[in-house]
Image (cartoon, rainbow, N blue to C red; front, side, top):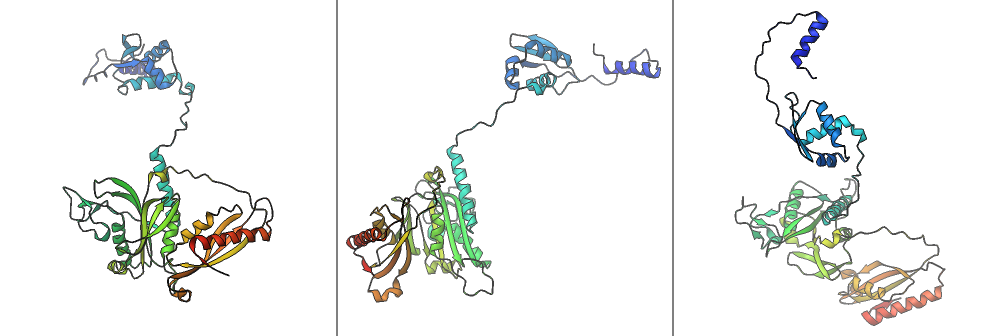
Amino acid sequence: MILPASQRATELICELAAGNPSPEIAITGKLPPSPPDVSLHYERCARLIGLAIPKERVDQILEGFGLKKVRISEDETSWHVPSYRSDIQREADLIEEVVRAFGIERVPVSDRSRFTPASEADLTYDFESALRQRLAARGLAEARTSALAPRVTGLFGTGALELRNPLSEDHVALRPTLVAGLLDVLARNVRAGASSIRLFELGHVFSTLDGAEKRSLALIFSGNAESNPHWRSAPRRLDPFDLKGVIEAIGIEDLSFRRSERPSLALSADVLSGSTIVGFFGQLAASHAEATGAVAPVFLAEIEIRAELHVQRKELRFREIERFPSITRDIAMIVPEKLSHAEIMAVMQEAREPLLANIELFDLFSGKEAIGLGAGKKSLAYTLTFRDKTRTLASDEITEIHAKIRERLKRELGAELRE
């Protein structure tokens, strides 16, 4: 039998200190009200603990803690909680008392580390995190600009979808492009004296027609290729090939470039994935670059981050180190200025020669350097590498294959081959 605290204290005083209790008991204040009755479902208790404890054992444990059963049904009981157990207020508290007395070490361990398939949101997050790390590793700094644009957004923000209740004149429309915001960031960096500016932003843009939301990546380059010490002279300037190299690192499938015309760009090219245009890059016209305060050429790009990029799973591939030597041959040719490098590469690759392992452009003369070649002409030179995995190649068979490729260039492109 559990004695009230005051009665037990009186007994101890009499036993240990020879006390003499008063026959009258004085009570001050009011006893605290008992907490409300709490219900317990045996089935829920077993599910939460992960182990089916017999009902009789559950009742025995709770009664041992001074609780009294006041209502009984087949799978549910109601318990009267004494006033000194105000911590018990809900069913989970009763189950906690059961586990505490039963022994939590006797509850079986659950396996919570099961594999779950990656969702589209997981793939998107992983791709964008890896993309940010890849761009940062190439020396680019990330910029964050507002998704709301001012009423006048300059060259790349015309036709933006305006808000009905804008908060201010600087935030009146949904941005249709990231480039306008990055140009403002460029101007601030130039005013701060930055000599090498390489920025990127990954964010949402909105269609000017219906406000449809898309994910986009913008890049902007200007200044020196690196922050050189003062004792170095004539540091290298950033050029379109620096920007093109970054675009190639994004991982766009079947990537290619095609020259295009854009009013605000002095040099412009479309970025294609297969036959689909996914963005553009180029050099900002000099008059517009001067408006930002830049003293060096400004190169920029914007590329739509399509869903296909998120689900790409590029597996690592390994190959055996080549055991047999390769043979290289050069091809130099004079072609029309309008003929692109991609068209020349396509002709050589369409020959589908099994021994042709690699093609590399190593020399180019165009513009003022190629005046002696004739009007509208340029000169290109390629190195062709031939190799077989199972044997050493003979010079005669490579000469024959090389001659076929030369004839193909003459026949399909009208190239003038140089010896």
